[in-house]
Amino acid sequence: MNINSSQLSSILKTVAIILILIFIGTKIYSGLSNEITDITSYVNYEKEDIEKKLDVKLTPNPKMVNKIYRYSKSTVTVDGDNKNGIAMVYFDGKRSGLHIDNKQYSLFNIHLGYTQSKAEDVMSFEYDYSYSVINDLMDGSSTAYFYCNSQNNTCLVLVFNGSTNRIVALTYFNDMKKATEKLSKLY
Image (cartoon, rainbow, N blue to C red):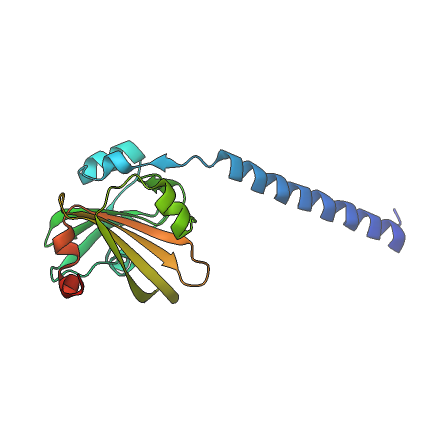
């Protein structure tokens, strides 16, 4: 069978169009099928319960420690799952927080990708005051906003990408004083 350049060009165009349509269809399907799991009720669960509820495996993960905005004098360790973007934070071996950096989860009605104004509009976390800490995280500038509830000694940390002003990570701490003890002179 002889194929001339005109027929070959037509076949390549058809294949390219089919591949583009498959790519677009896959993106649309994955966008529609991504359910977001709200894990607010899990913030004080033990590791085993979170693993069971979310079908994840949280193992000691020293690499994730640097992803957690905290200003504690304690030894910080993390049991995390890089693939699923969820981790438990420990101060001196005591469960002290829950961290997410994956769009499949939300905390207190806040999703990754929200702007600060959108997050504050929908946030169900009750706080008395907030402040920000500018830092460098994930190879770029970022700002962490600490929303603190002094009565409950809890805080929610929202990390915003410095370029896009979108949330890239969330961390809930059940011991605000411990999580922010190095910042205590600021407030």
